[in-house]
Image (tube, rainbow, N blue to C red; front, side, top):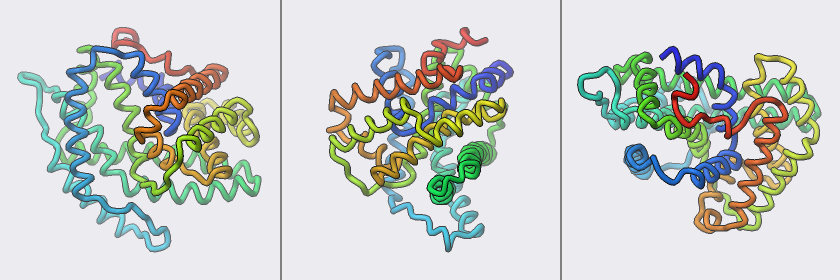
Length: 328
């Protein structure tokens, strides 16, 4: 456990940077999948089974996710959270590898993926409220307050995911130590990159909790990606101001990747009135997934983001070790 925790703390920026946005993360996963042609059948079989159960649950309980910020109360949020825990804990089967205290891979995958189901409603509330307020600050050129709300959002979401996972583990009667030891054991068995990518995908998957009803054409998707690349390359204000401010404080550097994403998303919304969840939904459509130019643009935005990160001295996707031995 010590090695895993030490690695996470030392490479927290990398974990966060690879889980930034719908476009950046989609680019990363497309790029990553193109580079990975084997080694994944056993692990992905486990992950796919979990995804199927999760999708079935979503279909059975499908309803529009809408949070009324005026009527939202602590009591309604508490009730929703308790209902989520009760339904989800019944879906996770806690199994251990025989003769060990390590959880089976399927159980680990389920815990990671169902954490977003537990956190979903509160994630929506936090995201919508933060978007509304920080964009007011941006439009009024109140850059210090804009930066503070970007930091606040990242801190709030990180705390939400940690608390949701901790509560889920407690209800499953699995200690945090056993969960972390089990992940470490899975890494040591050769599934380091797969687990690494799964952890990143959890932070992307939760973005899908905000449902999108906006359909974009393939050309519109391309235009949005090109614009995102332009913002990353030109870095218009308040891009440089906020990043420079954060680079001057070591304790803020870990939030820079997500801050960059939020700034790009705010520029994108200002120009196209398209939110991050709209991009996620439309990038997953077959006509987009099968478009060669979109793949090329995703590769370009991934490369551009990596260049920005490297210029800041924060690393990028190439920094992901291939196996556990590379960081112990």
